[in-house]
Length: 218
View (tube, rainbow, N blue to C red):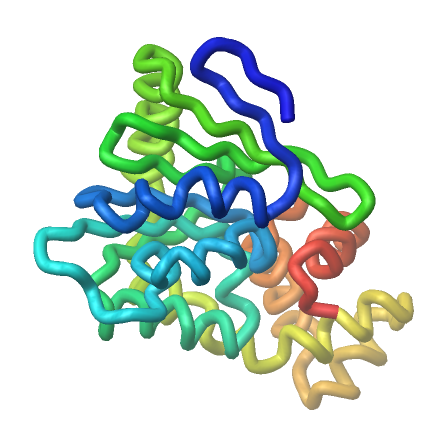
């Protein structure tokens, strides 16, 4: 662990859990942003409030911001919807890469860092000005993000064929042959590829493949 005044840098989920469990137990406002499925898995051990695994506490407000590519996985799309419907979380979807963070009561920010040897680093920040800056970034991303229902309806069709499209792209199959495989016209297939790239925040088909692997979609 490295410590700089009010910033503690820890490595591994166990240590960050031990240092923050009491904060989750008493928090009344939790803001969470994630680009992929793996970043905040340890939060479920905190009692579930941020992950939506337990009934919502009275007076607790939870806002969750997810990267759009996560909605391409049917299992996670259902879990995200459950967090909102059953546990009262507000959920929005961002198409751009977001700063992966959890903010507790505007007083503590947890930033996800790099991953080495299977362990991720986390910065635990309580310095007021820095937490305020992180909060401002979250709020800006939240304002520009799309409500879950709206975005989910937008990607529902492409989600059904995303695994096949990604597989065909990965094999380098030409558009005409890929379209025939899926029973689509070439123009429709290319539109679906463009929609998939948009959901993954990718500028090219190659980048779409990389993003899909990062998210565990392929």
